[in-house]
Image 1 (cartoon, one colour):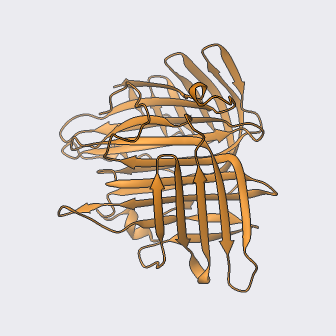
Image 2 (spheres, one colour; image 1 turned 180 degrees about the vertical axis):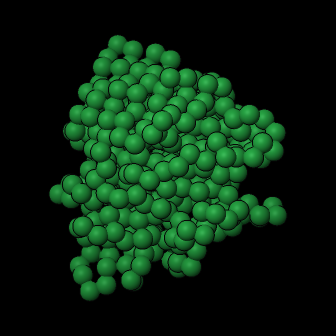
Length: 328
């Protein structure tokens, strides 16, 4: 799993953020874990690290009982561990393992990739240039997990759970974004999708949506989106999302997401320049994909709760409670 921390080499005068994260979802029930280790650095200031823990449980038939567990801890104790990616106040995320705590939650996890790294941006040059101002990769776009997560009043065994490991960094977040990851499709256990869709503001105007990512299916990988792609369509809401994603070789993927009522986590993300976004994430959403490839019949793939759907927005009238933890 290839990933290199960026924050140690960030110039003192520059602002930046960086995130290493994982998600894991139960194959049987709408239970999911989302753990992040992040860096936030304002221009001219030293970086600070935060550990975020979110646990989703949508097993109740009552939406009022589906609110995720959410906690966050921020510290100046931020290092790169030997052979690893990031360490914050005793929480360590390394290739293959993650151990740590966040308030009343703690965990000891191991993971193994099921597929090679995904670089969402199509050219290596884009990872060295100033634009886009957000870079992202998935060191493991599909992974198998083992271990346990300890929460107040319960211990959750993650043995056999599927998910992913991701990494992003940059000078600022997109003006508006969607992140979609799906795994655990019925009858297609090795299929996954990992795509980021964003708009940026330039001179006070919003650019069109641009998508970057891939779908892994039937032993191959099909790149989705790109700057030159035509036919991208986006309809996003906090509780649902529909995407028409152009792919290479005349293919396309249609994606429809449905979030269980009451099961979204609301976080506040800060930009290094002082701006903020409300970020809504549900890691136990339902996802239906329709894959169309030239010369082949269309395929429909479904996962009842294996989708992570994240929406980053400026507005606050979305109806999702934001966790009481500041960012920045």
